Image (tube, rainbow, N blue to C red):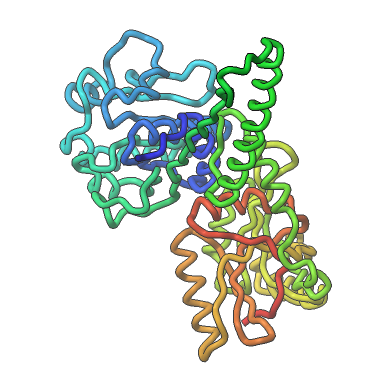
Length: 425
């Protein structure tokens, strides 16, 4: 028997978290074997990203309930009518009430889930328009929709909800995955009296009921906590981080190897602090090959949703070595004379390891290339025993790694906060 699916709010909460993986993207397919779940995930992404830019969610599945419920007028025109009769996107877009920068394009007078519409080359032009305006287009479609592979070729990538791969478009670039959260059925509790001939006073029944409820509540809480620790975290509400996620974040704040704090490779050069991922990526594309251990660190700004995308380079136990790297980068005009600084960032997110073997430098480079293809800026440090640890990001305090941890998990990795150790290859 299949366990019941989680309510829409869980998918919306997970969508908010997955939105971190879509920064820098302008057109994304959100697809699933359950299109309602995909719609809720797209709504969660839109609610999170609309704080930074305009977001348009398009219903390519045909009157998907969560999206249709956001349309408040009686105008039935939508995507189908735009493709069939030339109705402009401006006319069919509906602004979502109470959500700034959040728009929905309904399916229209008929379903647009046809190969002629979904696979139309016009989507390439629409994707280009959203990219040039620094806006986000989310296309909600069924995983087996006709023409989906053609559509995937015209956008930045896909977000999978409840799927490990997209069979209808195997070459599509997967940006993130959201699992189907399963909700365990409550246990059956027998509160019937053991002796039919024994008459229990009415007040005693009330006390017994309270006792049973307390026991059941404690049992369910313990089971829920254990299940959540073993599964991928999924938010439970669209407008706030659930309490268990907060508790989990606090538990994860402690580095996994506190004994290595004194020997940590703590010093790096902060090359740039950008308020956009595009700016940080541009810096890596220009000079990443000339900066050892170059990486991008997502660092939250206070308690706001804003983020610094910091470019760090180098990993040294001695600050003097970091100063030498900064001087060298300035001489080469990679870093302006007035920019860059040596920072103490002993923490990082360990995402992989390579056992000691011949040709370690080339193996580390190959692993870094593989992660770069997943849009993860990683670096490797050789350990005293000849093995290598692969890290992403560099942080001063454990709390600064929260956003990066979420982004790496969305990418399918299992990051572990640790004091980084080792030397550059």
